[in-house]
Length: 468
Length: 142
Ligand code: B12
Image (cartoon, rainbow over all chains, first blue to last red; front, side, top):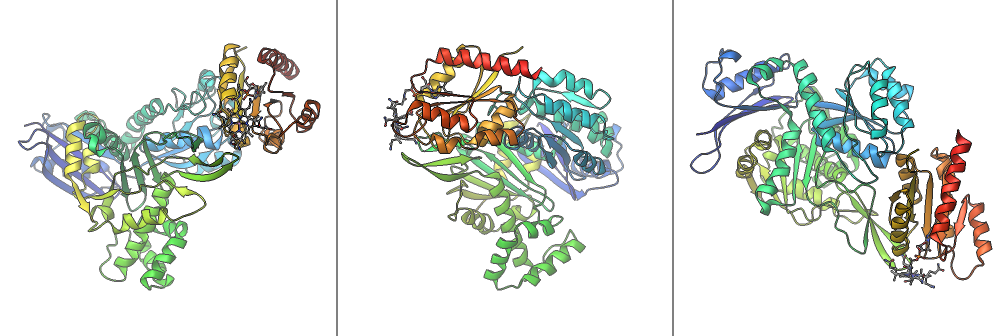
């Protein structure tokens, strides 16, 4: 039997599973384990889960582990992969730089367009990201801003790696300007207006994550001894969402919402724009596979910022439930005191549900494009910006809260709210079926998606529970 | 010097696409790096695309008769966004009905367009003018 281990080191839990890839009834879960993430050395929690899965004594040393079972793993510990995105025009290269960073499993902590100012550099220096993605200009296009921004970065105190993925005509000079820094040059993310090329930059981000960042977080030895290369957790899920419809065409037009304590991720795999006579696309034609991550939306660490961003919706929910705004203030304060808080009874459960619905609403809303009406002499047309998710057939809720959903109320409520008439008509999924990632396998199956797309798909789909 | 980039598009809510496609093919054949934004292009889209591609000129088309309103302020927006020296051309059926050509031209020049073309323009001539205008701007700049 072909066995593999998959481990995900999350910000609070380190979870793992031992899988049989060729069981008699297809791929199967043989064992699952989890333990709190060991913040002071991620390797300890990792080893605890690994030895337990393999049925070995906990004191087994790395070097004595069996070599016949491959170990796949991912990490989103310590805030995940923080990326600052620099582009030229906000709607073009900057937008694409952000999408590229997110689809590589990163979290965009800062973004800048046009010239980096002294203040921008000071902001970066005071809280350095893990890496900077520097883009701008089509191939043969603008170079002036790139040289200027590269010079600003070169003169800064920043020591983090810089990935240059802008105008290729500027590449060698940018590399020279930044030669005293850790600079990696790759292909332009937007070689021509509207044309996207995120993959080479994505590969570089992943490479840097491995070489420079994982090692610094107490995982270097594991990588060396086991020879397995970790991914940022969301990259695994991204690859899984890309793989599922390739393996199971019935599962085309898929959307996954991963709502956590600190961030909420939305993944979609569906065609972003259907050309018709009455719909004109403006701005980027977004990719079929897309991930967005919202650093201000989450149920625990980010509860306060969620309350700020979603106040209107949350107040409406409170009103419907007959609860005063103070009840939410109190709940948020309780969460601030204990980020691991689990609601025990009412009204906490209701308050948690109200937050969850607002969180899904905002995260999906930011992921999804819209139509605005325009009247031309010929009649009405729609101007689309962003991605059309109307044809999405299945919406999967993942992450602690949504995995445990008993019904589809939270996700359906959020989508119904998106469907309300507004000046901009949101192109959210229209009639999807809802599922919960009940066994919590998406991140663990995601780690296998690159090497074993079929098995990962089978494991992920078996984890789903249909929701009414 | 590399081939100059030029941005093409039909401005406003205008859906006439045939002339735009012809211009794309023609100017590409003449050795320009054509960045074609198609129909229903807003002023900001013209400007954004010109910045990213470092374009030497923006060629605005308007066929449906509302060109005057749609084109107002484009020059200002260019200046605002740092495209101080970009060449602006306009062409097509720029106004409704039969306003005399000279009057149309005067209006569009006052709005900051460097040249204005009628629907029956010989594109070869337009390309020759464009080349010499681009060279003149480059000479001024250096
Ligand atoms: C086909 C057509 C349509 C089609 C367009 C289909 C499509 N996908 O393109 C349809 C039926 C959709 C249509 C709709 C309308 N149309 Co119409 N249409 C025409 C028609 C018959 C031909 C246009 C065409 O394709 N010409 C061929 C191309 C090659 O020429 P061109 O577009 O002029 O472009 C060339 C030159 O102008 C020049 N050029 C253009 N821009 C520039 C820029 C620069 C810098 C340079 C150097 C050169 C240049 O080079 C181009 C290539 O050679 C014209 C009449 C005519 N004969 O021109 C009316 C015409 C343009 N339409 C007109 C009108 C009024 C409309 C509508 C408002 C009518 C309505 N109420 O339905 C709508 C508007 C819809 C919209 N939102 O845009 C009027 C415009 C009147 C005005 N400006 O005063 C025209 C002139 C008819 C008329 N005489 O009344 N139309």
